[in-house]
Length: 221
Image 1 (tube, rainbow, N blue to C red):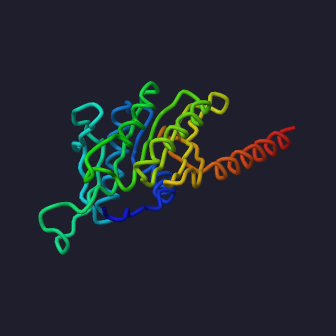
Image 2 (spheres, rainbow, N blue to C red; image 1 turned 60 degrees about the horizontal axis):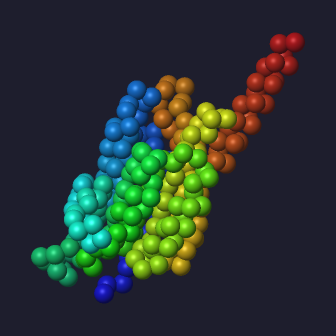
């Protein structure tokens, strides 16, 4: 069996955050368009890194006895090694809007499948109802990855009604367990486009805005 080639998936997440505004998603776009643009982003990233990308690529699920398409697959090709077959499945990505499909998303990423279809890296981008769900889902990832031994990134998004933003929580796993976390915020800007920034940037901006508003109020007295 080939030694797995692991990506720095937290770096992938940081690029996802930094480039989110470039997806040109507005409050008028529906959920399907968000899914398409985000999958396209990672497909383009994979191709720029030299992989072949496929949307809705087949992957046989032995427990269900049928193929369950991958939202995105990145395959490694090198004719110097094998001029007929891909060397390995570099990345399997799933992107899901429906809260009720959070477990199903993880089961697709870590399904029982043929050896050549075991991904070296997986990414799941999943909307959830609240942060209370994260611990359960992360434990499920750790449990299922004991045998698959992939590098994994789970990105959970949920609405924070207190601040009228989406919280974005990223968790990076190695086969040994949770490795690293990174937090961001997704919100609509003044021009009604969606953007992301990291928690520390959002906090600093909000504090500066409060100071500026306070100065204006003081000056108007």
